[in-house]
Amino acid sequence: MTETAVSMSRPITAGIVTALVGFTSSFAVVLTGLTAVGATSGQAASGLLALSLAMGLACIVLAWRYRMPITAAWSTPGAALLAATGAVEGGWPAAVGAFLVVAALILIAGLWPGFGRLIARIPASIAQAMLAGVLLPLCLAPITGIAENPWGVLPVVLTWLVCARLAPRWAVPLAFVAAAVVVAIDLFRTGATVDPFALVPRLEFTAPTFTVGALVGIALPLFIVTMASQNVPGVAIMRSYGYDVPWRPAMFVTGVSTALGAPAGGHSINLAAISAALAAAPEADPNPARRWIAGVSTGVSYLVLGGFSAAFAALVLLAPAAVIPAVAGLALFAAFGSAVQQAVAEPAERMPAVVTFLIAASGLSLGGISAAFWALIAGLIVRGVLTVRR
Image (cartoon, rainbow, N blue to C red; front, side, top):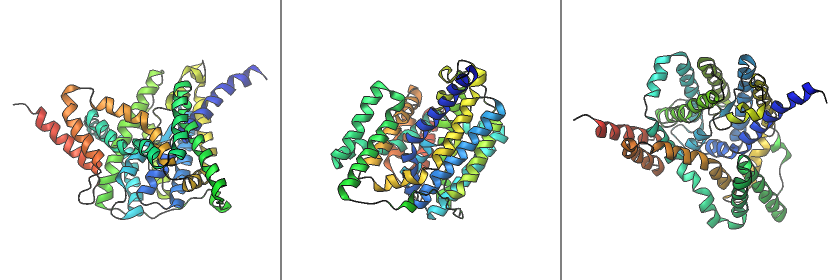
């Protein structure tokens, strides 16, 4: 093998790893979220495929054009928000309409600096407390799952725990592998079969509708969570490795990608945050000028993984009780811990953050509008009252 081939193989491999870790560690959260807001199993599988294709193309375009290891991802916290929100007025078509509104807001944030500054004025403690409250019920799934189905969930949790100690990056993907083994054993034991047609990936398009409940209960919180927990940290992580991500083009590409994927069920595309380091770190390539290849490789890998979206969705449907929710909860532990830490980091912001967290975690829904929105409003009100000058 030539020296050039060896040098190219390293960032290519880094990109493949980035995509594998990003996809397998959170696809269950995506399917859970889409199903919760009204998608059928076919529509949820379509959403997973649309997201895979959209973020794959976004990775390739951004990395190739700007010669940086810029990677895109679906919004995992956003999917968790959908799971916590549940069905809204107008059902699945209204959720699709909300996804399109999120795309428009992302585009506005990139093209109009004033709007971006307005969103930035939302205190990070409030936004992170809202996210933590949304994640809490999902993070409890591994615990409640052990009581509900110990023989199915315990192998998954133990696999995650051992790998979190020995290979943290692969802890959640290998927990998913353990879940797949549990599903296979259950299928063998029960004699259930899989319809081969269900394994063929396909897009199902839905005409959007727009309702107040979906716009306020899904679109606004989803946009805020995506910006606060994905786009802004993603830019910061890239900067820590010496890359200055072009904000406007990045928002334009991710906004257009979200708009293209929304009618097929994709909820949101954004800059990668946690997985961004896998393609941008020195481990991807000692030469920073060559790491953009890892970004392209990530995108191509997402396109390939999209071809297996229907199979992953079928696996979720066939899984015994509590197994897949446990995997989804384990995938969100790190995000929950980070959100809690940022929410209560400043003593002066602690009480508004606590109020926001509790309301978001309560699942309260008033007027057809989800708890995430009311948590945000209540947190801002409490903060305004407590910090007003006397």
